Length: 190
Image (cartoon, rainbow, N blue to C red; front, side):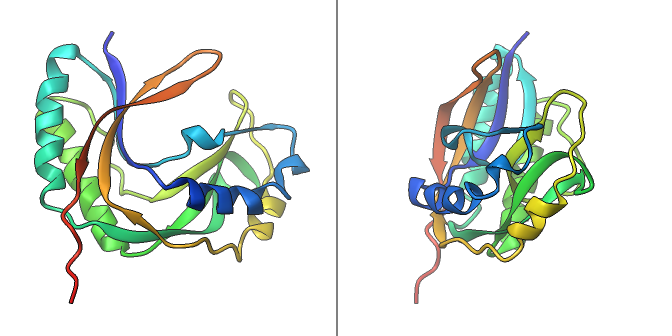
């Protein structure tokens, strides 16, 4: 078994704190949700799953190269939604606003990097979101009231300037560890 890895953008603490300030009012609405702690909130761009130690060096090289082809961008959190649907959700998420075409292109490049090293990367269209909470196990929760309460949420903009490779350590107290990071190209300034 390898190391469970994903590529992500890490929002700054100020953006997370602002979002959690809005979320705190709805956190008690459902006891069937497991809320993601602030230190584990991230914006996944590609999930790689278990990566063999021999593939990690090649993946790092390819992600480093991919980062050099994409501009840094200003993003913000906006609104909320659920997978698969709010009336019967397994995941509650916050949406992302900004240059979504650039974000999607970065996600495509990161996924392609994984495929080139032989990983079975999900090929569904990229849907940028920040996971806020999950239903326990196979349970589903009606989160329509939470989605409605957060519908008008708009967070402060934040710079996404680095692509991170993150290891996910599962267990009773899951934790994430940044394995490596690469700067995105500085955004063009006039």
